[in-house]
Image 1 (cartoon, one colour):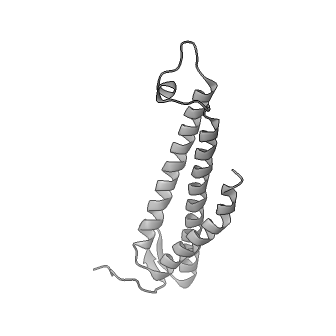
Image 2 (cartoon, rainbow, N blue to C red; image 1 turned 45 degrees about the horizontal axis):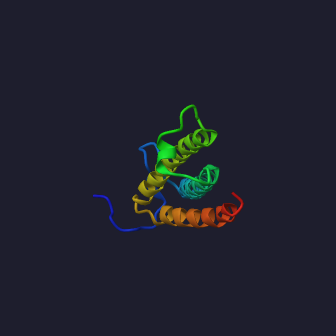
Image 3 (tube, rainbow, N blue to C red; image 1 turned 180 degrees about the vertical axis):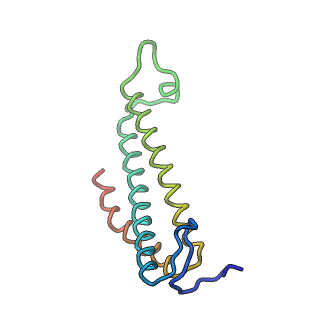
Length: 137
């Protein structure tokens, strides 16, 4: 039966059967991979926020629900086209964010404390590094 409490060990199976760690070197590399996945998760999360901000700035100042759903006769609207592409971009960012988030979560569910610490440190470093970029977007 698998352990359901955190433990410190240099052995673990992470995400896939082929990611079978059974040495200290393998554990260090695995922790680094999880750390980088956590940093990437935070970067994608911030990228999604920057893209939303740009999408909102691209909207016309006088905006109504009808203007978004039903364009005027003969008006394809550059703002409406930009809004669509911003929405596509945000959707792609969202998919990448969900995949990365679930991968990190499932790795943490191995209950290996080293992997857990790698995820926490990666998330902290990622947020620390990309948060200042939010003001520039």
